[in-house]
Length: 345
Figure 1 (cartoon, rainbow, N blue to C red):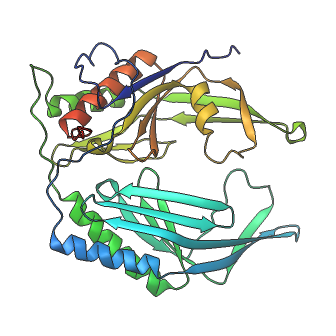
Figure 2 (figure 1 turned 30 degrees about the vertical axis):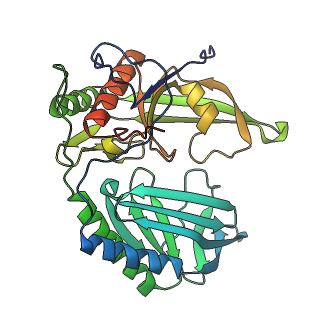
């Protein structure tokens, strides 16, 4: 298979061109989002203050996962979690958590109007397709309770007791409910350019009619002893539900992470060839030692980054379509207020 030539189309919210129905915009630097929404209610501010205090007081927790196999083999993994930084911002409807774990430090952030639900569970380990055959079951000691916050990049918070987990879940649900009810006042489309409703309808229609996108690749590791790793995935037809009131769009598809996309939270949009995407990001679950892309499908990835750098991705078989959707998303973000506040100095 032929290598895909490197190529990146960067589109930012600072761009003001409206010819997105024909072509994508020129590369530029990302700008910060500036949501045009109502101020938070006193109830939301109080709820998120308690939420932050609950998370800050959790402290460090340690647990061990034991994997049991049919042939009697046992593997143990010691894990830990320490929330070293928590910032719950009601003005911005955002939650940012820095978690120090046994494997390093992980920073998670979410804009709460993008949250799709909260669940609690004592199941903190799920086997996956990469598990060795003959796996029987897993046990966790001491018992740990998980609070899962559904979003494009979900957050999992661990707690030592069911009561602590449920208290945080209740606070998260209430915060999401209030933030999702905040109406956004969009800008008027200038110069005869498409309205917000027309723009979101265009994006939704193009995603719905795309059909299945097949992605595959092969990567090699720095160590020859590890061998190559191959992977493939089929992204099936997108289900899309725009929301004009909150400037969001619910996007779902079989074979990919899904969630709500808030257009007022966009900092940068790029269309990458799949090979370039793999080189920069690696697919989920692939060991970080696999750094070289040997082969990749001739498909394209639309990378939508928030101002703090976290990314959501959509997949396309056709580059022209990916560019048109990217340009439309830039226009929708402009109308929803992203990047509208620019300091003079």
